[in-house]
Image 1 (cartoon, rainbow, N blue to C red):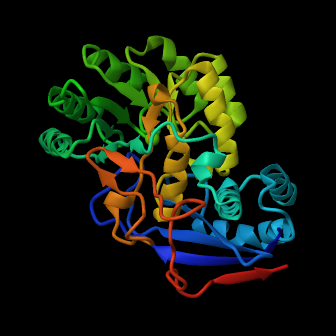
Image 2: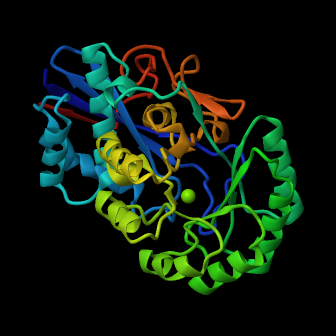
Length: 369
Ligand SMILES: [Mg+2]
């Protein structure tokens, strides 16, 4: 089998509720969907959706433009040969992991369909079909944040991520204390600053909240700042935005900076690299999540497929954007949040989704072999 055609689609995925981070808010991101068609007529799908212009160092128009080089590099190749496909993409274009991730995911979907297996089987097999997930409490005043945290726990959520940063840290400390005060014994709390504090602010917050059970996720902007503050923190440190590739993750494990990772499939370039990172984290006994920053059913299915293969003792969950927007591609099988878990889609082989012809509209670009 070989890749014969690549089609690109653009789909708006507007947020239906406030989703605020320290440096930005999610409004109406456009998802880029890749449809790969092989020589037997099988179709595989991949997706990437940038959450906001400030969240990651990529522009959504640049993602679309990257396929001008990536598509010719992969057409003609065997989608089962993930290493060959990734090597060809890397040889054609440096960086740009987002577009590469969409192609890589589509190849895994195609491989599953060709082999009549679910992607989770090809990734090593599911440890569970019910994948733990977490929910976000956006930046708001302390009382609103605490009320949100209570409401979420009432729905079965046992992992809460409280956003922080981008305002005076006394307000962050108040919100953290209020939310920590309503945590039930079975609920974990992570405070995610999305790079929003200085190193001094991070240490001050950790000291002010020293008696509270929580972890601090990406409190500062750079890997150097995280390494510098680590010995002074009173809480576990989770690295997200600075987990940029396998090398950086290995370094932060070896140097003892990271107590865990929040990992984004599109930042790492797809499921192939995520599989390698998972094996490293399992070996080093470091917890990780399997997420993306935004997106529809395709990237969600990819995230939960890898998330299902995680050792449950080391899984920080698989976050999906489904609860935060209304545009869904497969209402029957798409990954959905239920009682704090996401169920692995089992609508068919590959990623387990059933996508109707035309559900993405007309392609914005088509590349042929
Ligand atoms: Mg994060």
